[in-house]
Image (cartoon, rainbow, N blue to C red; front, side, top):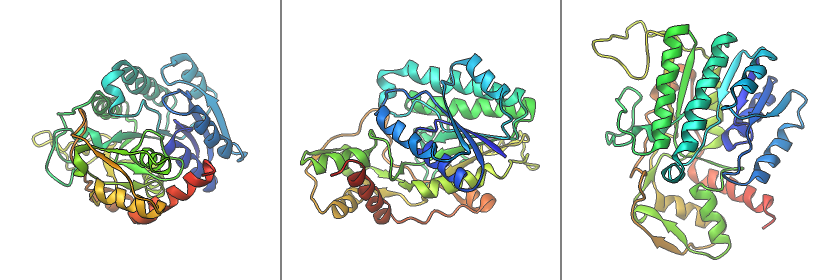
Length: 335
């Protein structure tokens, strides 16, 4: 097997590529190394991957159609895992076109590459944000998700629709994974855990939205990666029971599946902060703020389908995961 991992210098892409290399697979990683957050952090991730002789990196943007076509033509990828995207809900309020170019145009180019080069399986990152205004918990892939509340969420929903069209028309096996708040070592600097840790270590106050009543299905990176690998090694099959009279959004008569990938345990932001305070041995100074536009009050993943189909078993307690992040943060920044 030969894997293409897009967004390989990103948080999840880096950990995923590293895990695939540990398993003995050949991995080609691409990333455009944009400056949405620290390029130095991305390059340090890549340095670790490049120690392995079975890893090749190319700086490439998914929106560059000709470059992507050449990449596919020069490699015989059996599996493609798309982790590349313009990330961040709040940033999408200010820079919506960045999401159209990367998450929609770029994804269309990737689908074309898979279609014309007989890729066995495309796995792509979707997001829990697609649930938007849904309030029935836990969130299920079998529920309708037609009310996103950010362009980021809408771009991820569009990926699911585009993948289904290619799966139906060209028989391209596609699996979409809706990620629920991922955290851990080498994490993104714009995510809450990173921001909180940095502020507390520098004795600055932290901003706590929705007055701390926000609830998230926080999922540790190692659990996420194991789920992605398991899903990528199991090609989706058509659902023989699918009916157009009562269409199931999570499956299809085409080789197409959607899964939630989360911890299956929604906890309040205040508990998350308490676990961080414990790991740091310091108290946070909190500034309580209202909900931000584009945010949802709670996420909670129903992962029964992923457990049943691939054996996914998230197992990292929040306290342990945060402690590992803090240990990495102190070491990386020499704090």
